Structure formats: C-alpha cells, structure tokens
Length: 117
Length: 112
Image (tube, rainbow over all chains, first blue to last red; front, top):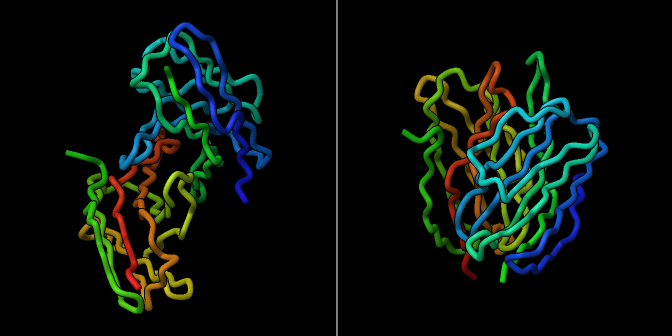
C-alpha cells in the first residue's frame, strides 16, 4: 500500500469553482511533487517542493496554485480550471536529499481524478 | 532531445514468453535508475531499482549499461498479471537531484 495519501480520490468541478487537492506523507521525505497525467501519457511534472520551498515550477498556469504547509503536507489549489485540465493528478514524495550520498526514489499516491465540466 | 527515450510498444506476448524492454537516457551524469509499473487507472508503483551490476527479483531482471546509456528490463515466464505499462525513470545527480525523468512508458499485454 502506498504511504502517500491523496484526497479526494475523485473530484468534479465547474469552471468557476475553487477546490483543493490534498496530499500527505509520513515517510520523512523532504521533497514533494505534483504531477498531471493524461490517458496513455507518462506523468508530467508540475511542481516540486524541496524542504518546504518551491524549487521547480514547470511553467504551470496560475489557475493551479501549490502550497506546502509543512514537510508532510502538500496541497494543490484549483481555480477557474478548463475542461482540458481534466486528468489524474498524482502527488509523490522522495527523500529529497540535499547531499546525494545515496539513491533518491520517488513514491506516488493513488492520485486524484479531476473532471472539469 | 528527450532525457529518456522508451519504445511505447505495444508488446503483445503469449503467457510464458520472455519479453525485454529497453530505455535510453541522455544525461551521462544520471545517478539512479528505476522501472515502475502502472496499471490502468492506477498510480505508478516502483517495480525495481536498477544497479550497475544488474539485479534480479524473481522473474524480473534489470540491467544498466552506463557506457551505452541504456537500461533494460527482462520479464521471464510472462503472466497475465504482468499486463501493464512499464515506465523507465532516471534521476540525475547534483542540484537537479529532485528531478525525475520519465520515459513514455511501454505497454505490455500478456495473452492467454
């Protein structure tokens, strides 16, 4: 079973709604990620937080707003989304080592299925 | 050039067959290598890490060739339950160490 938990598992929202996706991990990992995945495509990186600071933003539209309240939690705030934003949103975490003395492995949550209507 | 290149398949093989997937990566400084398995409508799950010496886990064998910058996954005695998409993942060194590069995934269907 995954040690990265995501809620909700399914979300349907209108284009004017504001909603949030939530993610939690208790593995002591210091890097957390949001990925977006469309059908038959690999996960596409959106954001990376390292030690609770945003370290990578892959030019994601501002209608997606990440937040990292602490080292265990990661949120993705959604506002004014478009139908093409419908996808599986995956949260993940990794050791996030500042000094690379050993391997760094990424673990995924079960994902949140988002439908924008 | 993509960081990681992977043949998308699909691979359709009979039960009991041996099947191999390859993946190439462009950054020679890459440090860690993985194979993930993703079932339909599920999240990617770590299948195995890939080490220079090669590693085996039951019917699965992973190999890394640093000189040619490719990794491989061999599945022996394929089972119906092996049907999934297999993702090759590469993690570079240094400051980008929290970045993971994904191949496009290879689709495998094992046929009765």
